[in-house]
Length: 395
Image (cartoon, rainbow, N blue to C red):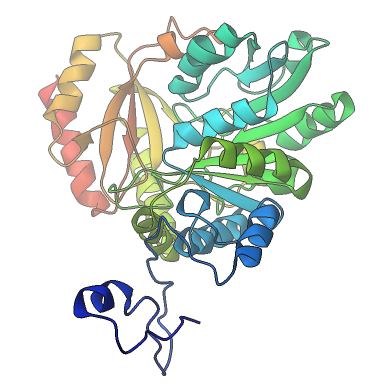
């Protein structure tokens, strides 16, 4: 409760001190308000001291860098979506990933990383982890050779399932059993699954990371990452995040929170459109292979059926001809697909996936050019017509 202002205050002071927390009567807004704050005020010194002492164990509004009520609302939504204990928010997906490695690993530790991970994770391992004495080994994306890469100092098993270029799947419950037996922390990048299509924490992972930039936001206008953990894994992340002063703006939190409200409806359309185009691509003579976990002949399809609730808008295909300039012409010819590396927004995108430079265990050197499509919310017949004219233009 704000203290009443003395009536003797002059106008310059009154405009600074007034309306700090206006009172009103009536209903409440559907969405949480955007609370912009760096400084947070307390009624007494004792209250400030008490809340600061409790802020790791409890979620308390104590200072702008420690989170704000708008972000707290989004954390609740994501934690529930992931089936986890609690969630922290980060400025980007990569920042979220980096915080996970920084929190749970120390010099002298060894981490096992899936071969299919997001390329900047490889860069982070080379430019930060290995330079600070953290050993890194990559294993096959399906997890079949994890045990042979393990070392006595292994502390973490990091997977991306499905992968975001050709959608490799791993048996996460089996990897969880292996991790438990060896006291490894199991971390999963769940950006593909978005918490609706795939839930690593319910399958045995300790930590789940998502780039909220993509499907959670859904509108290609905000950057954010999330980390959700089990209760056992929570406290180290909470303390390290506060140590680094990691936080997101309330405006960005509001945008992602608004995006989550339509996540299920959007994903249903992305999936419907992508499946239609997937089956169309399989009939094209220009195409050698189509990659989608929903296809019966896709490696790991049985795991996808068991562990996933559906698919999304991502589909990749390999050209029948080994002609890189032709693949570039194809992408350049597209009119309705933007050329971009991201995905998860409302719009369709196309990019050429260079698996030769992003795989160190699996050999893709003999593959023909591969194009990854993100199928958006446009009418799929229009997208098919655009793809057809691009094929025709490339001969």
